[in-house]
Image 1 (cartoon, rainbow, N blue to C red):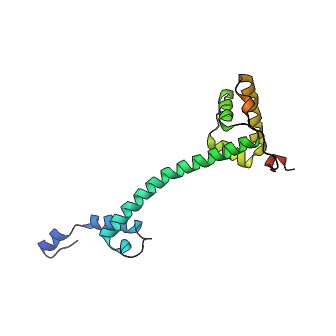
Image 2: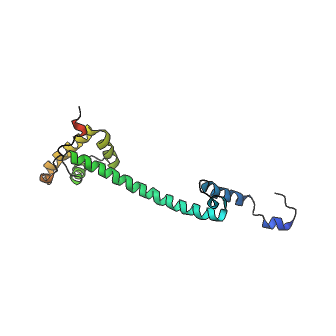
Image 3: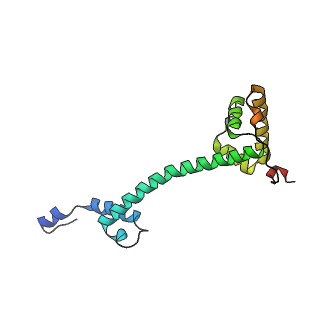
Length: 148
């Protein structure tokens, strides 16, 4: 940049300020009104949005873990075993499947999930776990494994 006076040289903050502001304005591009155009206001709202985005990533992980656990427990209930006994029996059998994989199996591979629940029931009986408290499958409900 070429400056005609020393005053303009001192007042100019150089190209770094342009890029710093441009980054904030890009993040504020979808805002409405002065939150989008005025740098000092945009900076405030962009920081707030980034805080919410950080919290949202953590909440998304928790929500997905809860969803997977619900799906697996519903699949276990269909086959007459509790979720806690199912997980304990699988770990004793050495089956190391996480909640997401078990939930996918419960949703999309019902016969594979039934085989896992049967194996878990057998392991629970062999180890003498409290199998008498296992759930009865729901009546009057059409399960995925009943379809032909």
